[in-house]
Length: 600
Picture (cartoon, rainbow, N blue to C red):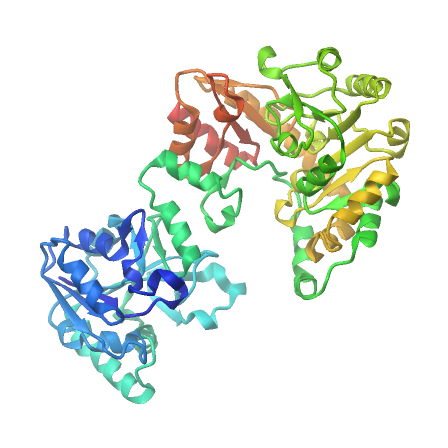
């Protein structure tokens, strides 16, 4: 068995990284791609490794020759790399292809060693390595039947994304028997190049062969083994994360992205806090059916979208502003409010981070994250503030104050001339939602009340970035409307708000399911040794690790199971170890229960 690596291309999409080197010289985790693959192949007892090189080949050959690889390495130079495609590079190695069985791979790949073992251990002699198509993938795909026959070979430009569920992506790694190469592939390759020229791709020849006889090559499916194809800097960024050796560093690197986890399709996100039961499939279908026109047209301006928000939450247009997520409105509100702000710690950090006049902290850690209004009023009487922030239920603890307590706090604030920023982003999840102050009557009675609500969280649409801020302070609302961009929400978000009323019954049912699941999930989590679970009125649980396990180590270990949780220990900073986990549906929650029980 030999290996042939195609490494002649320029890698233009990597910009400055390939100005003086071919792209297989790009580093991932401090190791160049070519070194990583050569060290893997060097363990496999191959007779030789053949590299077809072109762009900046002197640098590449010099580097490879210094690696102390025990397997003999031969080079073939493609000196017209800039005028040809990989069909020509492979044709340069056609004599070598027919000599013995071959592992054929491209040089812009990074993969686990087990990926190569899968091919070598399979008794079938001619295989293409494939993986289930995911959103991040690009390039040639195949359709595979139950017997691993390749029914179709589809170039990337001809993919039908409506049919993506049936696609497998070629990993650009093949095992070719000498007989297949000598008697089938090379003759077809030569004939095709004569007709079509050298600016084509070798996969096209494989497609032609399989059209005539599907039994000449089989698909070898991957089942979770890591690999990635690096074409641009974004690919490189993701590959850096996937192939980090240190588990804790990988966890912190992933969470520092603050989202975009759709790029990691196998990942189960228990970190971000969204409704798992809404929107419904029907609502998503309505959104999808209007996708084309929504993407191609501008959204309405603030006045129209304020009307939508006013309709949805039964308040006056003059008393509500819609935002690109609640975070946009929090930032602008705190920039306008003067004086110090009182916050309860630990909390959603966006509030203290945006306080221009400084902030005063009520430390709930001293009372095991529990507090009542009397305690808050007493503390902020001794430490006066101009404004106070209350998240109800609180984040990250899930602590909840009922309607009576909230009214008491509002009366205290009114009598002391203190503005209250009341964040009800998670209130819909509480068993009793009567604590909501989001009404014209309550806002009129307390004109220095500023109500914040993240639609993204409770309605399960974080990708749309929607939030509202409501208050009877018309002057403040008008100022906020002027400060944000005129098109601060996009057409998808606007359309969601427009159709929301039709799905209010579905939304209420989703909250019922969430509360039922929360109760069951709490009972099951409490059975896990080494885990203290705090009761929660929200859609998440804060938990203390009581068996000596470090929270970041646990989070890193769970990431190996494609489970992402929130490490809270740095945020709480009291010498103990804490995590926060979102409530998902039953199947996902059971998966997390099993993983926690195994790791604790």
